[in-house]
Image (cartoon, rainbow, N blue to C red; front, side, top):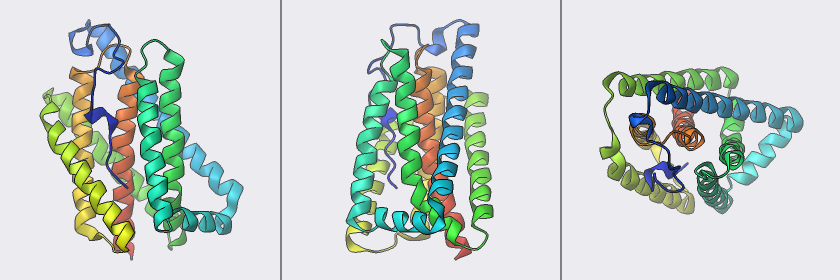
Length: 247
């Protein structure tokens, strides 16, 4: 899974003409932050609900077949390519200041497609003994890391926008390694997983500081999407780490 957070690109694209949240009145700023995290929670719950629907409708046998087809070599590259393209569209919609409905649609679109991409990894986890517990443990660990990164930004009020260049190049390097590993059929190993967890934490610091310093009032859907993308990648690699330790 590649690290490709759209928020590392042009933050003012489709930006509303309202004040930046950092310069707004305290009640407006608090309302923006509250909406951002409520939208994030809603998107996470949507993904959880969709995964439950997938497995209940398909059953494990069919789910395993579909997951195997999705992750079979070039098929997985196609899936990731489509995911990255849809992610770009979702981010553009979420930043459309002229249409609040489209903003929400962008966040929902990302959540739906991310749940589909996550499906094969969850299937793999469920095939392992104690798979449900592994998924829950990975979710708790992900939530803990996300909370720590969030608290670090909110307590220090530090602007982590200086991470932007590092995150872009780190994400590009990770994507290149993933493509090579798929094409040549080798495992990137635990060091890569740890590096991706660190990169995801960097994205969370960056995205959270943008919520405080660089988003405008009214951009809560776009801010939520950026946070969701980082949270998704963090969970992906934390779950992989738990699975690799179990193996």
